[in-house]
Image (cartoon, rainbow, N blue to C red; front, side, top):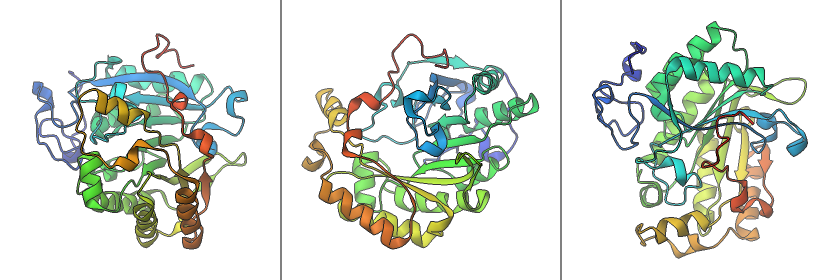
Length: 328
């Protein structure tokens, strides 16, 4: 990669601190840290995505041919054992293609031309420096769509501050309240503290949610939480921690029940560690999900819920198909 990147210390690739792992590797010299990302951006899929929250993807479902302009990045700064994007998230993934900042900026503009509601950056954290440059270029060339930072919630506050003015919407997870669970399932025991600090910065930066006349989110934070089987009490603790961190009225909650054990079974069959809670080998029960939903209502959250039919593998994009970069 020969482009000059931002000189902001938080976005440096010569001593990488783009995520809270603070690996400190020199990615410009080919070194890689936990995520596996290098000096160049590896993009695994570009598509008009119609299955995000309605205020992101549109309210017409399959009949809405616009959708969210999703750009899926390879690799990840987390290591969730049940990851549904396993084909692209591993540190050794080679799915996709390398893009320069110029090519990435053109991709954003192409999605805008195709009618996307927004630019949806999926798992972008470990490429924050390169993406910041691409967004700056694209905005200078006419990008006017809201930019969505679609993240697992494991974010560095200094990096988030460097994104101010470039990102309009944070679509962020808050996965765990228990550090042991976070370490066991995502290799990040510090996740609960990090996610709360990141959430506070995101809301400070964007303010309360703002929608346009069609109900599409223009600015603000969507807080996602995936309910896991056997972790009902931790899910409730997550919502309680979030409500202590930000005003529930300022965000929208997306309470997900799409967990399926299919991806964990793939991990285990591939030789992954078998020391995982047995409850993860099943789906979330109606009782578990309703208990967490009731707590969300009690705490004053508004937003989106999922039906049990969402807990199937078919809603995960195919990252191996040949049309990955056709924007449709």
